[in-house]
Length: 313
Length: 313
Image (cartoon, rainbow over all chains, first blue to last red; front, top):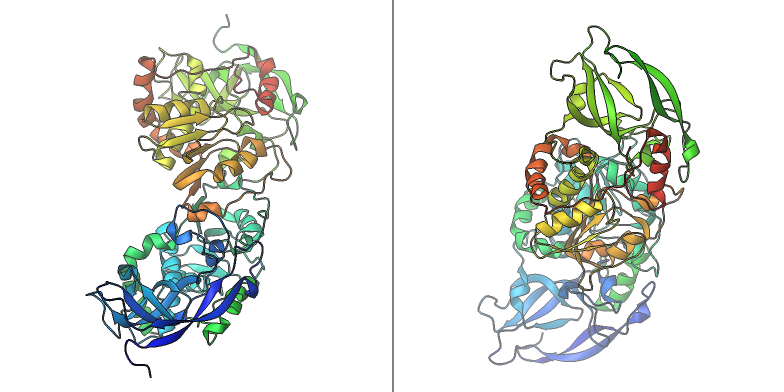
């Protein structure tokens, strides 16, 4: 038990340097610093204790030294902690809207304790009758990605055929369940296997890219929609893979739409209205892959690019 | 002068056999048959004299033996005339809505005279104060393609940057002019040169595909739109070219939409309302490449795949 305002040790996962090719555990290291369990006098910051860190494929992009117009995609700083989606508990607060004990999620550093100077960007955790780790998955960014990518980008209609790649991943497993609840036929594939509907595909929820996308393009039906939120097969390549037969999208009137979950965060409550009743009725399940201890975070993050799905502290 | 009901000679351009790779003149031949200048007794058919035949890149697809769900894209029949967009004059009619002397355009065989059994699918020529050949271009399928691809697929906003490939082609030259009239900045490229805006591209009107598309993808701005109505660089290849760096569409929220002009033919009058006043004010120009005589049609069609733009009889 630490008293308020005490100085405690604070383990951090530090980003060593920019990565090319597959990331390795040695691209990160764990170090121990110390932190005071109190926000600076007069500041509106919030100090949190981090409970769950999420390993997400999009984080690979931030390990490369590529400029981005989006602050959400700007590179990690070598020598500073990695950051990603985190579930945390408020330890001390100078902000009128947060108080000690509040549960939040948002983009936070990979460390045991974080001082957050812009707490307005955190989400409050609305329900605690589900596992808190769900706010890095089903009820967090992956859930928002799955829901709005499917509904807003693909407008699924009853009876349509939905194909999901990386269907065992944090996002993919939800797309499939959401699409079924909306009356669609769903086929998912995991790994590199290509399974498609013999009758063709109305909606493809793209998580993989490369050869998988090419196989799907040839099987799209007229007026098909492809929601592209990730292409994990391509992130670690120097050259893009696959000679895409894009001409087929013309006469099939196929739409390919890139999208970013951050754009839908303002509609979080709409997503919760949809998903929470299904969770309570047991109609949605969610598989998590949880590793213990912040020391295991680098291995968990590296693991998602070699076939593992989600890793959390 | 031929009397009504007379039998006249009728030159036809016959499709010899399915093509792989670049089409050659010898994939077609001109033959002479005869036809009676009268529709069969009691039929609702229309007999037309063809005035202008249009050579369009999409016709390459019909020269391959590939099944299509769309009748508009089903393969030509070896041993039968090629068909495409044609401007024609009614010679005889069994249909109550057409009479001798009416001018029409639509998909018609490449021959001097054609008996049309489904005249409902023809369009009447609404204005004759413009060159009749325009109904195979500016006021025909290419114009419809340019207009609806730009407006319906790309929703151009004033000040946006529009890039057009194959900008000297039948469609490309119109996209550029339409976009300028809508207040956009336009850059066009012809041939294989890649010229892009240093500040990036909001709208790309895709006629080329392959390496051109890849270069553009890397230069798209956030929320950019790509209207894909053709990829002429790819039509004659056995394998698609270019390793497309599609991952960039995700974080840039780019939309790629394939579309087919046929889907907009029902909105022809809306397009005319837009374009005809500009033509009359001299604010739209249109460059045509007209070859004389049906015997020159095979060379004209082959020519569009080696750098020529439009060929008409």
